[in-house]
Every structure is written in structure tokens, then in C-alpha cells.
Image 1 (tube, one colour):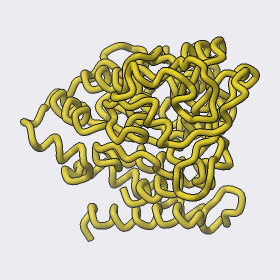
Image 2: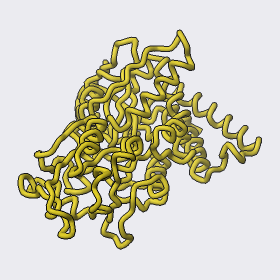
Image 3: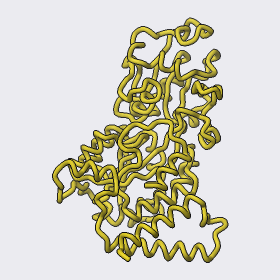
Image 4: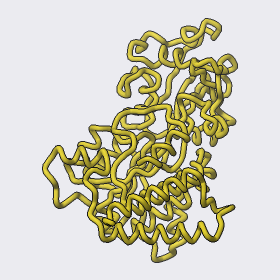
Length: 386
């Protein structure tokens, strides 16, 4: 039997085992555990002696549209460079600190920054960073930019977030909001016109409306506007914008007339000064407040979203310490995500991520187009069929 055929059989077995939770740590039998270990060894051996499959991913398909680049751009610094989403930053930063502590004096320096998902992908696709944090999947234009520079990547989901619509704790009139009302407030046509709370809902008081939201280099900006306005780039611009969620939280917490949106963990850290609005998706289920349980049950829609890290595959090949760090990241992402007040994936999700990383699975399961309102179940299905 050819190596590639055997490889696919083994991978299919592992994925199906993952989907059905056959070898969950708490209840796995020694026979299944041993079989899993043998399969992983076989996969590693085949990876080491098989050539990459050029039809493996959407990114590969994009890459074939331009001349092959034999010398991909790789960050040359001895430091592991991480940039991108401010939403994902708390997870990556906490894991980097834990990794340095676990490795002691021998730990490689890790530089974790945040410039926003979009800005992060610009740096990543230019070969300036090893890992890009993202609060949305990579887009087609970013895939093309990576392809031009020969930057291939592995997409690893690390947690879920409940994008939160928040007001000041002194706001006594607003308890919930509909997606249609959010569109009325945030669509480009609202600029300079929707400036009062009473314009949102007749029962609200005649008070000035002060808006706080993500900056244009933020993945949160793209996600919010795709969901609310049907276009990731469509938004009014007369509001206080920032790629740093902490700045938005500070603005809303100081202004009784404020309305803003940002990641759930930033809201959780400042609950004494903020109030989260329940969101009515308009599908007959009523308004639902953001929470871990609502995300897990797929009832907090359409503002539940997966969070990612993207890994430069050439950097992994040239930096053994990067491979070690990514494995440490995936194996600790569930616990750290919970501590950082995100919604972790099921165990099967992290095992799939580790399997994809070991396999060197290049590309994205999201086809380079905005796909908002993805549930945990849908994400796992996409991962399992990748």
C-alpha cells in the first residue's frame, strides 16, 4: 500500500476517534490508548518521509495562482514573535509567561504584542511574526498576501469568545438590544444622524448616545460589522475607536451615555462598572445575555465566535523552540482560556488542533470568506473534515 494511502487511513481513523471521543483521557482503556499511540507514531513516521500534498488546503490553491517561491520569508529573530488580535492577546500572553517559567533560564524569549487582527496578518504575511493571533479567520486577500511572500500557515482554534454589547453600569433603561437596532446605530447611514438613545427605541430616554467600538485593524471590527451590517468594512466612523479593548472598556465605564462592543473577557474584568446587554437575534428565542453556557448551547447568537492562532510553517521547521512552544500552547489552551474568562473548546477540539499541527496541515477551514455565527459544534465539524 502506498504511504499516502496508509497515511490518510490512519488520519481518518484518528479524526473519527476524536469526533466520537473514543479515547477521552478520563475513561480511555489501555488497549485504545496503546492503539492511539501506535497510530501517532505511524503518522509521525509518514510525515517525515512523505512530500507535502499540494492539494491539501485552500491556501495551497491560492499559492498555485502565483509562481512558486523557494525561499519563504521567515522571521530571523531568535525571539518568538507574536502579534495580532487584542482579544486573543490575554491567552497568548498568559501562555507565553507560563512557558518561560516552565523552561527557566533556557527559555527562548517570546514577544507578545497586539496591533489588531488585520494589522497582525499584514505583519504575519510579510514574514515579520511567527504566530498571528486572530479574532476571525484569515480572509482571501490575506491568504493572497501570504502566498506572494511564500508564507504557509497552520490554523489552530484556541477558544471561543462572546462578543459583548455593553453599556455603563449607571444605564438603567437598556437591558437588551436587537440586531436590527444595532444596525440602525452602526450602519454607515447612521453617521451624524443616530445620536440619541431615544432614536434606538422609543422607550429609551432623550439622552446623547456616545459610541465606542473596535478600530479598523481589529478582527472584532470585521466580525461585528459583518454580522450587523452585512459587510465587514461597513460602519459609521464617528465613534471612539481602538484596537485595544482595554481603552474601549475604560471609555464605556466612565460615560453613563455610552454604548460599546468588545470581547467578553474584557467585560468580565470590569463588571462592577459595565452592564452587558442581552441580544435578540430575531429568530424567536428572545434576548440572550453573553455567558459561557449560552455560547456552549449555541444560544448566544450571532456574537459567539472562534479565536485562532496562525503558525508560520517554515518558522516551525527552522525553529525547534517554536514547535515546542506551540505544543505547549495547545496543551494548555483550555485551562488558560478558562482562567482568562474565555470559553474553551471541548477536549476533542484541542486534540484535533494538536493532530493538525503534528501533520503540518496547511491552510484554513473557512475558505477565506467571512463566516460569522459559527458554533462550537460547527467548528469541530470543520476541523474533523479538514
